[in-house]
Amino acid sequence: MIGLERMKDISRSSPSKIVFLVSDGLGGLADPATGETELESARKPNLDRIARMSLCGMTDPISTGITPGSAPGHLALFGYDPVQHDVGRGIVEALGIDLDLEPGDIAARGNFSTVDEAGIITDRRAGRLSTERNAELCRLLNDITVKGADISVVPVKEHRFVLILRGEGLAPELTDSDPQQAGLAPRRIEASSPQAGRTAEIANEFVSQAITRLRNESSANMVLLRGFSRRPDIPLIPEIYKLKPAAIAAYPMYRGLARLVGMEVLSTGESITEQVETLQQQYDRYDFFFIHFKHTDSRGEDGNFAAKVQAIEELDNAVPGLLSLDPEVLIVAGDHSTPAMLAMHSWHPVPFMLKSRWCRPDDVTEFSERACLAGGMGRFAATEIMPLAMANALKLDKFGA
Figure 1 (cartoon, rainbow, N blue to C red):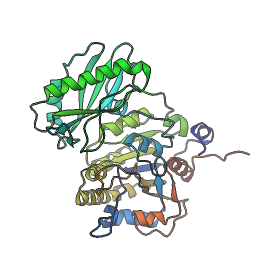
Figure 2 (cartoon, one colour; figure 1 turned 60 degrees about the vertical axis):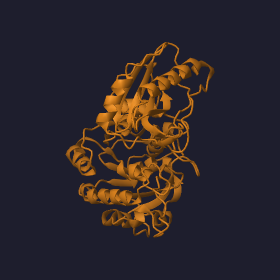
Figure 3 (cartoon, rainbow, N blue to C red; figure 1 turned 135 degrees about the vertical axis):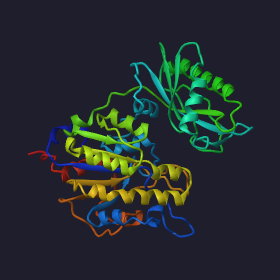
Figure 4 (cartoon, rainbow, N blue to C red; figure 1 turned 45 degrees about the horizontal axis):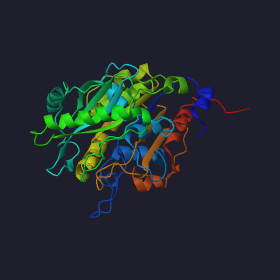
């Protein structure tokens, strides 16, 4: 990998356009009954048509065998080393809902969740709680007081909320209470640095008071916290790649991540059709577009194979709107795999394809895991996608003499 500093040296501005469509949780595993993955099961003539014109492969977001979170998975797609730039989930969620944060504020991503009488998690998302009910519960928790910190609980979407801790001497080096799978008990939050001891006590006291206030709730009777973080110092996409980038994303977390790396976040509807319409309306104003499609991930996390297949078909139906613009570079990729068979993020490589006038199309005839593994890119690091996109958009100068 050439590194972001050297990319700054050879990147240049040009009129060409890059459209980067990210289907969250794209990769899957075969249904034992059919032997086909979600992608292989879906009817997707438009994605398959792109594959026949593209350079294809499979990407590893972090490293072989490592399961990515959403933030590191996306950072890798944008060319950042996700291990070097370890961005906490909390700050990304906070930025995604436009919270006005002070430099010392600590943010954590929260889930309303369900535990049984033994304190074991039965549903990490409380049945994908409605956003309206989420807001009511956040109001219930928002007047919790703990000595040493001002506390804010802000609804995000569905079961998600943001916890903000503000005060002197706080530190974000805390472990998560969320084990990120059902069948386990929530974890006690621990300090992972000496200076974070008091902050861990404050966070645990918040959880304790929240449990008391939620005790009469049938489903949302627990809060799970993860990704304690402050806003990091991170290089920006306009500086690295000389791009004027825009993000078209409906979910707050991905809007926050886009803001963090210097993209302008555009207003859009929630459906992929509305997102493509936003792209068409704003196409002349920017030269890089990140479009985020969430449903492939959420249906995979629900363990609903058929619904994930349907989400892929929903995405495919919107693809002609992208092709009608004929961007110089069109990329379709994913930030990680979320197989419905596992109902969670996984370590499996992710299908990828890049269409441009200057790529060398391979023999791939459909967009799927098995087909892309035989593509011209083979299996490669997701951090290499941006240099490949920039080269195919003729936005890179020669390296060296």
